[in-house]
Length: 548
Image (cartoon, rainbow, N blue to C red; front, side):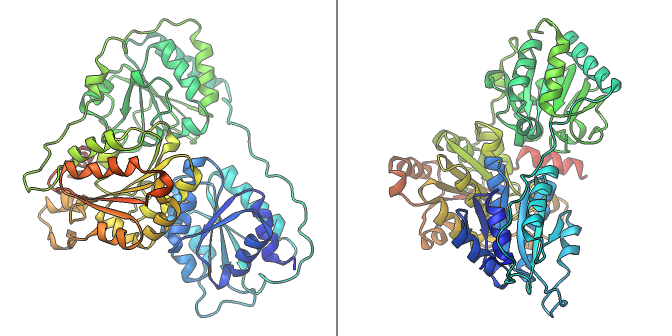
């Protein structure tokens, strides 16, 4: 029967190929129609937050529209942290949910529209006569504004017969934002003039540059000016010539590389928001450096920016290239020892407390992990180790669900989305013991979906280390910051994975043996790293200093 739920499912399936979710009363008929009447694949996770997280990671790894589904009430409220993260990260996603009946709320219903609005997501509610059209509107809204959109199906509308599914228009998306006006044209010329005259030019790019397809143009701009390049954590790999790239800018960067950034006399920032971490809390550039920014935000996003152009990263970069007109490269990038500048601390093997030095573990894992990998990351202090030591090939190979909203506990379901978005790659999760325990329900999902293409690295130091290194130093009670010893390797093994407790660098050889087995003949691998909590990541030292 062509119900309202079928109209939503069939119309949505024309725009997505995976829907992540948890079944309940509010979405049962939608999932039945999706499964029986479309080619889209429903991927079950074990927690409603995980549904949105998996969809979020799917988009970040593939660039495609994401979709998730949950029931109403408690099923919907469970999504809110993940939904807020997707809003902050500008992820185009459609979340199909059940909702209260049109006759009014029941005792277990809540004002879902208000809750979604509170975290920045708009809700579209379908009716009997407009379900397909409303679904297309939700899709178009998500793609146009790059934001999650909630698509609600009232409980008493879900099964109403509404006739054949109508044809609907294809979503119409806005073109790339062009440089507009004489003032903006003048700033483009000013950037070109500054780069031509610079002795030590620097280009800094973020994920926005990647999403705009600006990598090739940025590479040409770097070649034309002789600029060194650097990226945000989410922009790694956007420049085509890694031999002249300093790596991640900010607290994840190597000390020598950040000293070179301080030497720049002109810096052009493209598709990066210049948040406090990238900017090292205002200390990234030296006084006197002329800083220009190119972005689609309404205005410059940091007070150190002296010239701003609003526009698509690729469009503006091409415009700057045209204005250069035969500029002579500075020669700066050929004059410095980049290998030495990018070198990270190797660690001491074993820390003073007898546990594994996380720097040593991170460096060794960088040697052992498969090159064809997607790294997905939870939030927490351990972020420093993977971002400092594990290079990735492109921005869509680094998924950090949680950092935009400063959330933890979103790691394991991220594996699910990334594994389905990149079926050719190995997905490597990096998570802490605190966030790992919070997301434990979807360890099963990760093991089931990623299988022999999945690796989880748990930085297990028995504490909420971010708080320990910030508030513990201030003399606050440490007991709430501690986590009893947890055998993640044992838990993983019970769920069908290969769990390995790693207490020495030599224990990491288990990864080498795992890689020798055929992908179809090996289980998901979880490395339970028993690391020392006494070693503090440099980016967290910066946060501690900034917080007083």
